[in-house]
Amino acid sequence: MSQVATQPLSGSYRAQPAPSTVAFAVRHSGAFWFRGSLSEVAATLRADDHGLVLEGSADVESISVAEPAAMRASVLGPEFFDAEQHPKITFRSTELRLDNDGGLQLDGELTMKGITRPVAATGHHAGPRPAAFGEIAGLELRTTIDRRDFGFEWRIKRPDGGDAIGWEVQIDIDLLLIREDANVDD
Image 1 (cartoon, rainbow, N blue to C red):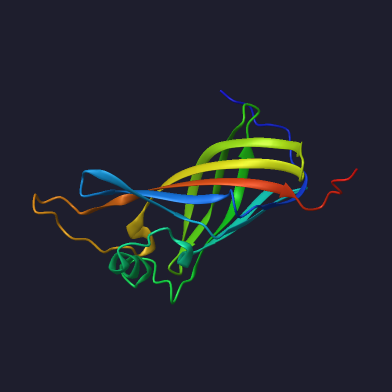
Image 2: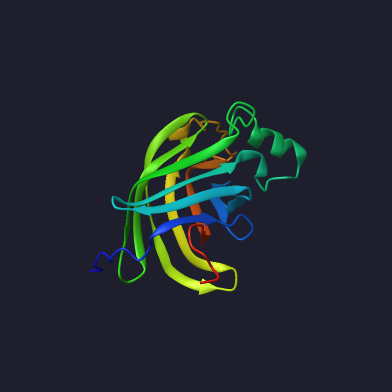
């Protein structure tokens, strides 16, 4: 059993957009995992006397689904993300616990399509360390949601009777965080 770590983070960190990712996978046709990602990611991690708070967002238009054009239009349309009405996916933690062994547990609220639901995630953390471009830390998170909880109810049956797209969606988040409130020249 892992022990809760003493607070290894202090101050404020901002995710670096280029290497930070939000990826998803959903079972398609009962035969393969349809995978995609959102590349325009923003996140901050703040440590204070009350603990850690992680807040973030991803722009729906940055979804990796590009071809065929009809599929992209469907994914961005009202049956799925409804990007015109809801251009961002947002998250705010309510509790973030770091273990001494590098594990983490996170509870928070995820909002998609204007619907906010509680979510829990597990993952790993890498504590602060120096890098050529400042003090860095890392968070890796994983959760599974039921897409119906967020209004993604589109479905079509396969000829064999199964659903073309599964209800469960795996979400993986990797964040490279750089400390904002420290002088890196010290």
